[in-house]
Amino acid sequence: MTPPRCLILLALVGGLALVSSPSAAEQEPHAGDQVADFAFTDFAGNKHHLSDFAGQYVLLDFWANWCQPCLNEVPDLKQAVERFRSRSLMIIGMNSDKNLEKAQRLVQEKSFSWLQSSSPSTNQVIHHVLKIKWYPTLILLGPQGKILAVSSGEKPPLYGASLLKTLEQMLPPGPH
Image (cartoon, rainbow, N blue to C red; front, side, top):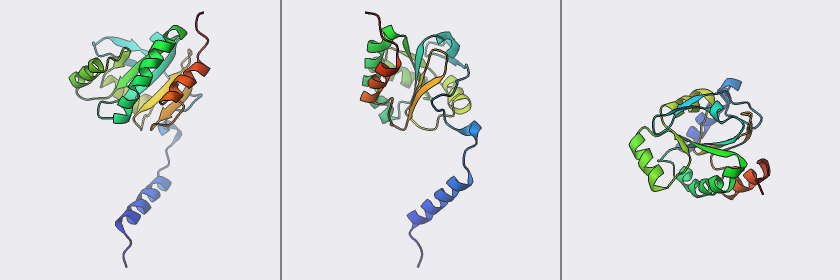
């Protein structure tokens, strides 16, 4: 009797996971990690560096237009921008779409009001700097560039209503 195909596939996948555990250099980012400075180009073609935002809290939002869970986060990101801008929060969308025009149209249609990094500059960050493996991924950086929180694959603390609660707890009080 032959085993069902799904069991064979699971056994193969499980075996690969056991054989190829990621080295420290390949691991995804974690809270407490320091993020090295990197350069990126925005949708208008302007060059930026992460260090341009030193002293601010930076929320990196890794997304693509084909990722519905990424797009589901837009309303909460809009609330975060409005509610926490005065508390030194900067959001940078790290878009990885190959078609810039399509991504620009989506940003305009959905009224994203935060800075957007375009491919291929985002791809350099995804693959070589931060080793992002899931969409969506959100990374909150403190004023010195240290990671305060990470959410990938739709897990708290930076998704949905958890985003606003986490920002409320981690950012300094706003002006009164």
